[in-house]
Image (cartoon, rainbow, N blue to C red; front, side, top):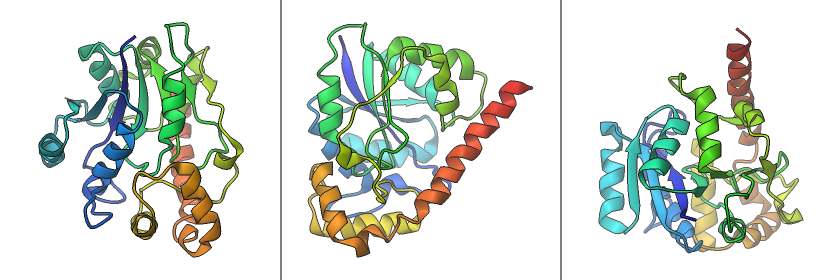
Length: 251
């Protein structure tokens, strides 16, 4: 099977403009951290971004620094972008990493991706009580094709949870307890999230494993509390988009 890690990122973010190219450490932008962590999974990597001119700077930066694949596709419907990327590169299964998630659990992705031996594998989603930003999805191509069937007419889709009900075989990834029920937020969406990551990665390596990051934050509560309050706003925005799709599909 052709397995890949796909980093989904674009520059036209609404809440924190151009967050994918924000400087986090003296040597690392957000995209550097994502790629450096993804490299530890030991699978080929593709940056899936848009065709828009707004992403030219991102693409040029990555091309100069890293020997990874780059796919440019649909700007606002990320399922179409994923599907076109997987088809073009003949990918059978991909671990998807959001461009927001600067401390994603690369060990979890690696463990699950290397379990996959054939197309009988079931796609994986995150459990509800997972620490935000540690894991998103692993999808088979056939499941992306199925999702696209229900979303291809949408001009824009970012939160895809409503449509996962159409995937009968998808299941929640099994995670260790340290990733559950923690008042910790590991995603970059607002200004205080950026402040949080700058503080975090001042003391800890950008390639530290997520378990140790969580241990560190449980001790260093001042850093943890910089951005955790934002999780409520973030989840409300997620729910708002899910309800939008529910309403749209009732019409």
